[in-house]
Structure formats: C-alpha cells, structure tokens
Length: 266
Image 1 (cartoon, helix red, strand yellow):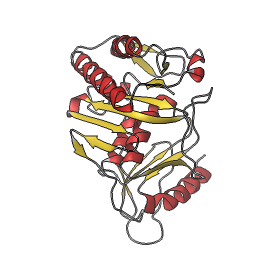
Image 2 (tube, helix red, strand yellow):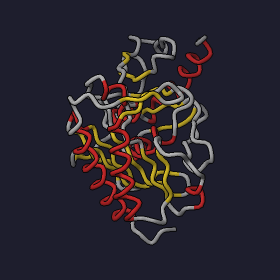
Image 3 (cartoon, rainbow, N blue to C red):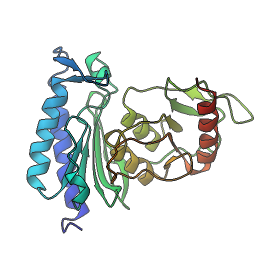
Image 4 (cartoon, rainbow, N blue to C red):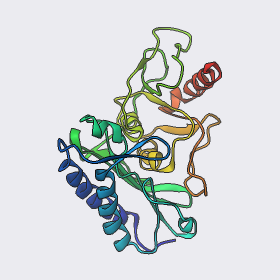
C-alpha cells in the first residue's frame, strides 16, 4: 500500500483536473483537429493536450502509481502498482466537438480494484465533483446525495439510446429519459440526485466509470452489475457488463427492468 494519504492524493488529483479543465476550455469555439479511432469514435487535439497535462502532473508526482487512460496504450504494468490513475481526458468528445456542454474530465485513483479518490469536472457548466473513500462526495464544495426515490415509476433516468424503451415498474407513469453524452456525467448526476438512476449498456470502459463510481457510492447510491456486484478496476481487460446506478431502494427494480430491456433488444 502506498504511504501517501488519500487526502494528499485527492489534493493532487483535484488540482490537476482543475488545470485540465482550464486547458480544455481554452479550445472551446476553436474547431480543434479531430481524428477517428479504429472503433469509429472521435479523438481531438484537446483529448491529447489534456492527456499530456494530466500525465505530466500526476505521474511526475506519483511515479510508482500505475496509469490507465483512454488515449494511452495499456501495457499492463498498472496491475502490479500499489495505486493506479484511471483517466478519461475528455468523456463525451462528440459533445465537445459539437459545441455542447455535456463533456467531462473524470479521473480516479484506484487501489485493490476499487476507486479511492476521484475528481470530475464539467468545465462548460462550471461543475466540479470530488469524492474520497469513506469521506463522502461533493459538488462545488457542497455534499451531494442520491435521490430519495424508491420506485422507477415517474423517475428521471439516463438510458442508453441503444436500449429499448423502458416500461414502468407496475404502477404510475413511465420513467422519463434524460440523455447526456458523457457517461461519467450521467453517473455524476445520479450522485447529486438530479437523475434518479442510470442504465449502462455493456462495454463501458474503466476510464468511463471509475471516478463516477466513487461519486455514486459516496453519495449513498448503488453502481453494480445486474447481479449486484460492484465493478472492479484491477483486471487486464477494461470493459464491463451492463450496469445500473440508483438509490439503494430503487436498485432491484432497475436491475429487473435492465434485464427486460436487454432481452427485448434486437
């Protein structure tokens, strides 16, 4: 285990993500260069610039920590490190390219497979989230909590466009769908209670999830697979099965409806 305290790690992480947010904002409205990766997703010069800044600041300060980022080839060395940075330079790159406000910069430090500290910035909306294991989650300095909703009926959910339309859970009005380009931002909004829950299709990656995972759990929520197991971030592979995020009292209904939706999808 690293001798560095989690509080020190959070201070480091927060400062680096704030600097990255300022850097990214400097590209807004300037039509950054865009490339298409092998999986047909876009990457821009902003992703690369933010990746470079975070790498320089974080890895220099914690050279013994591992590194996993969407824009860096994973050599597996992180699996032997005491703690690992998990980074998505820009989550929601399409939103950034289109001039939207739903993109985020999520970064976490994981230890023994679980996130211990996290920072997530939504620069366009002026929102900055942090969390520390056992210490709660905050947004712009204020403690946040998942919603108190207990039923999916009438809930506001973030549901992938690739999942079928959800029905209600037996009574009342169907849930309302609110989609955000950044998966990490959808989960952050579950953490702060502005969304009641989220359904996540298969193949979300470690860097999409790790920071927001800690936000949800420290805000009193559940983020799990459809069997109730929490994600782990210490595996050679980085993809995950279908997941749900919700207040504890709504989690079982979310899992059931997610299973129904998946079985009905083509």
